Length: 168
Image (cartoon, rainbow, N blue to C red):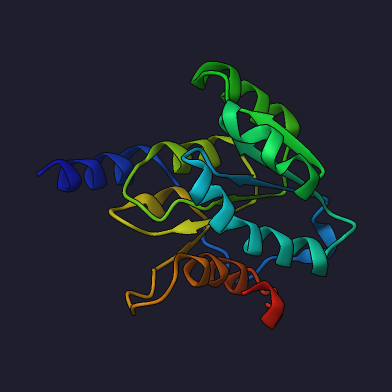
């Protein structure tokens, strides 16, 4: 019942414009959101690395929890440490990111809401339990048995980025 109610509320209060592809020449900055545990962050690194390799001129930022920040500083151009929802909403909006990637493959709504309120023209993430209503490029997860790394690389592929074998 909760998910049905959530879908109705999201459809009423949130508007989105779907995009079919990212116009990469216009992209100057990307935010990846990964607000869960260290192991999940490690699983996300191949996806982030793939984007960084193909578009080295694009500034890549990563929003993580406090305990993870020091582990990933060398992987991205900037680490934003989550310090409460009010502060992070204002902070993300002020950055004016071109692309926001919600890496969470779950039904939790908060990272997708952050992506939505970033006002980025391109918001990518998994469309699970109506989370896709907050994204401009929602990706239906392939429910085939494969690693979480491969699922997250599916997001990168949907962004139009080739994934090298070494990044898998």
